[in-house]
Length: 315
Image (cartoon, rainbow, N blue to C red; front, side):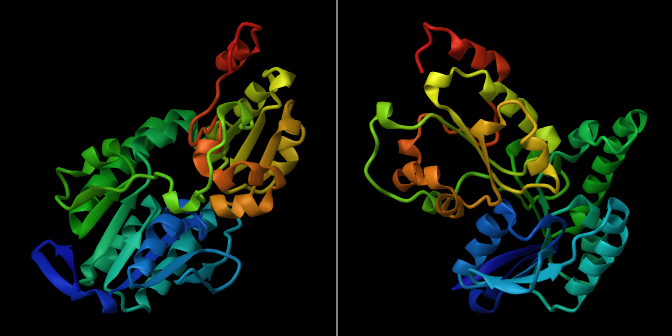
C-alpha cells in the first residue's frame, strides 16, 4: 500500500506503514475534535505513525496517537513567543514525513520547515480575515487592517506548503489560486460516535438542544442559555454544551438566567459525554434519531424561543 504526497515538483509514493506525521498546534488543546478525533485518529487507524504536539497535561498515547504535551501559556504574549518556539523545537527534533500545522500564528514555523525541505500542510480552520472583528483584545480601529494583513500573510505563505486543508469550501476558495493542492475536510460528526440502537418515537424523545464545539464568547453561549430560559416549562427543554470549557466559564454560566437548564460537558466526544452525563444516556444510545432537537454549531435564537412559547406552537 502506498500513499501519494504532493510536492511543488510533483508527486512521489511513500510506504504507508512508514509514514510519520506530526500535527502541530500552539493554540488548540490536544483533545480538539477536528485535530485529534477527526484527523489524527483517522491517520493512526490507517496505520500511520502519528504525533500530536499540543497543549495537554502530560505526554500520553490516545487511541494510537502519541501526544507530546505543551504547557498552557499564561497569556497571549507567551503563546505568540515562547509557545511558538517550543512548537518549532518539538517539530525540528522529529524526522517526520509530513508536518501538519493548525494555527495561523505557526505560519513562520511552517515556512521555516518548508525551507528546510520538509513537507508541510497548513490546516485552515477559520476564514482568518473575518475572525478579527470579534477579537476584543485588539483595538477596534485596528481590527480590519490587521485582519487584511493576516489574510495576506496566509496567501503569501500558501505556495510554500505541500498542501492546504480547509474546513469549509468558502475557506478553500481563498487558497485555490495559491496552492493547487487545496482540499476541503469538513467538521462533520464522526458517525461511529453515535451508537446504534432502536429508534425512539418522536413523542418519546427528550427536548434537547446540543452544541458541540468550543464555548467562547463569540460562539454565543450566553445568548443560547438566555434563549433556552424563554422556552415554556412544559417542554422540560435542556441545553447541552460538549467541548472545550475555558477557565472561569462554569462560574459565569451558573449566574446566568436559564443556567438550571444547561449542562457543561468538558469533551467534544459524544461517547465521553454519554458516560459523563446521566440524562445523556437516554439520548445517544439510539443515536441522533432519538433526539427531538440537535443543534451542532448553531443556536436557537430568542425569536425562535418566543415563538415556541406560544400556546398554538407545536414542538
